[in-house]
Length: 179
Image (cartoon, rainbow, N blue to C red; front, side, top):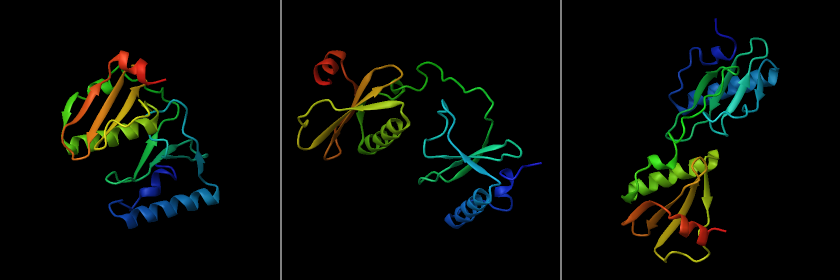
């Protein structure tokens, strides 16, 4: 039998924005009544974004994560086991080395920039400032340090959308430009 948090989506399928508003209203009413508590994200949990909201049913101990919608991602309501061991990722299984280096189309470069910004936000990657002088007027160069492997990569985007590149920065260049 589902607890109060599990029953929040009973008779409600979140496919439209209005459905999500109903869900949020139900959740807020439960929090306001004291039947449900909002809790901080457990330390070490990398599965969910920092912005996602965690809730606990004090009567049953059930915990759920409300994955906040961010187009094209729909909102989600996920039951979690707070006592389960935190999964440790395989070494280098999800580091920046899995992204193929080389030329990128305009669409690939734009998508890669979005992924990199997300990884920076999650704390898995650090954005670096390679130098004070711009690369050129019609291009931008962004550097990213993989915090797992400590390897630095750069995304070079041309203003006209052509000749974009994703590449590993040689260690000698990193030491020379990043202080």
